[in-house]
Length: 265
Image (cartoon, rainbow, N blue to C red; front, side, top):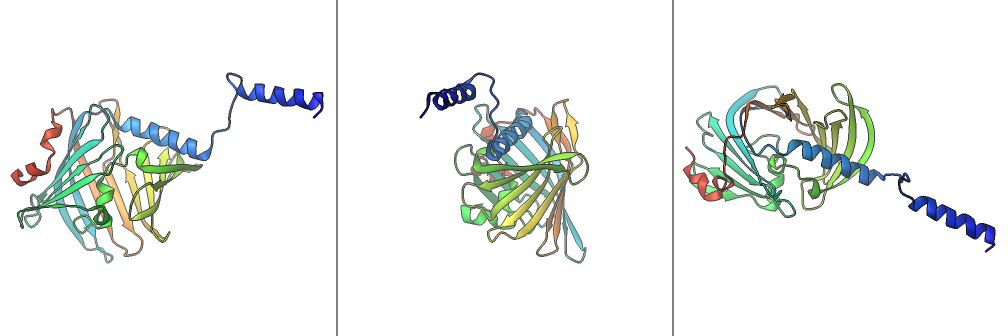
């Protein structure tokens, strides 16, 4: 190797290692960075309560409605969240409840309380791809989507489904799931989730979730008022309408335990 070539290589190495040198960001690193930033903006609420409706649409357009209350509480140490959704109406589903423990760094836990059977049913990992109370939402859709549960890859920036510009990111589950891939649209302005396309284990486009009606609470927390889950294989869809978000209710994580489900009234 000539002295000239050796000197040139040394200069290249020094330039690449110099402070402030720009290094190209990989698609995986960019996807992960955006996902973490979006997740951080969702957190910090402590606890919240919300009321809502679930509207089920058949392929022919027939509807059935349900009303529910839901609560979330965060871990102060970043150990995931706990949530409880309780149906209040109509009578045939009243007090049916879903308890979810989203665990950072480990598998999530879910329990379904069925008052008509006086039974708490633990949802197995294989059962989380099943439909939640007959809706187009699976049990795993009702879990907070922790960043560390997925591999992320940024694809492109593109128009959002409604308006504005979105980051389009593929996230692939690290553990067992009913989905092989979720393609998400996150707006570039506030990093709010706008749409998710779900692909089944064979790679077919199974469902699309569209999220809309965002409102800013406490000048800090963006929360949606409407989520529409369309099943492309069956033609059915389910709409979740959220209202009356209330933050800082003094909820305790110990209230969100399986043995408390039997006391729901």
